[in-house]
Length: 71
Image 1 (tube, helix red, strand yellow):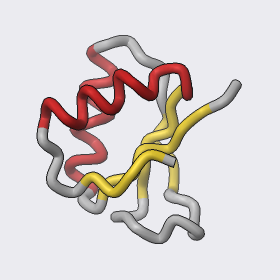
Image 2 (image 1 turned 30 degrees about the horizontal axis):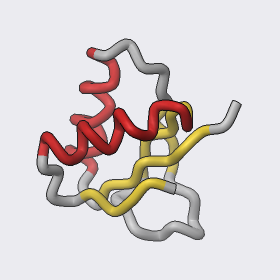
Image 3 (image 1 turned 180 degrees about the vertical axis):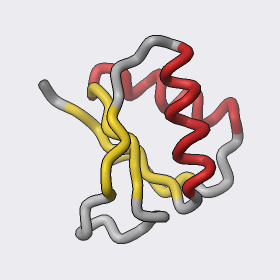
């Protein structure tokens, strides 16, 4: 399965995003952010790539200030 990694600079926003995904019953994992991204608080959300558009909508709607990118 293809996946994306959603990266935030603040741990609280990473966990908040994960809780929103849980509410939508979207499968996800909280993972250590890969070193080559080096943009974050140390944890990120790994989720299916086919849900990228939903992730972008959530991020835009909730105005996450520490959003660093989707990889």
